[in-house]
Length: 302
Image 1: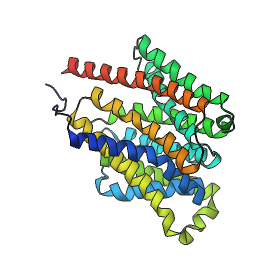
Image 2: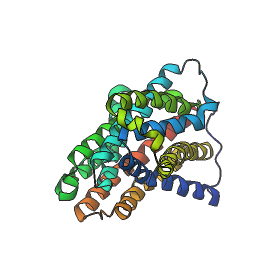
Image 3: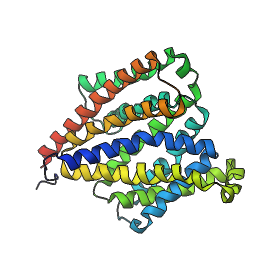
Image 4: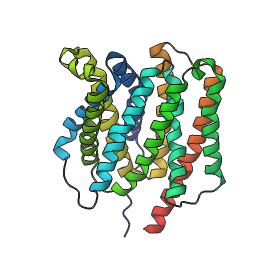
């Protein structure tokens, strides 16, 4: 019996959802950077995850047979990922370079699938992995980006955590997205709260005096990027094949690079543009080929 979603014509509404999804994800880097400039990074992460939990709390429920995966995903995706990514944005000035390095999550996830799940890949995806790493490596030839060594390293760590989360999410197929993010928000709030209590007690003490305007970027990141962005992705996957939808997410990092360059006044240099183009080419190859492979596996299973 086939469990594939029914295929719909890709119309104007679908295109609008794709555009909104990429803009929400692309502008998220500005929201997070603004938040960590206004308050300590772990405290900002705590507020973000608390908002995610409050928005999704009504969907929180025990899912038999999936709780270990849900809790692990919550700790990693809601907690440790934001420890790394918020620290990277707090110590870096050239946010566009971090957006490029953030694309390492895609090749990392494929490498983990090869090692952990024993997946077999052919030369196009191997070439895509190589190009992604070469593209990020080219940032070393850009003096402005090379100064962001600690931020780039932390972004690479965050990308590796994201890759682990992508494997865990494979075990959660069929679980409602709001239930997943209710657990992510809950576990993230607990993890980020504990980290902030240990390392940023001054940040927690200052929360009652926090300007209301600072809550805007937090809310955008939590509701816009996480709940609405992921919700849009799920909605698209319910209407179209994965091989159609997944490549459509490739516009988000491009939006991040140019939006950050404009917003923070750090125009990309030619080495950075070249490195970004090479990295994105590699990510595109991996993304498209992986989506087609998944679609072919789904058809054979059906």
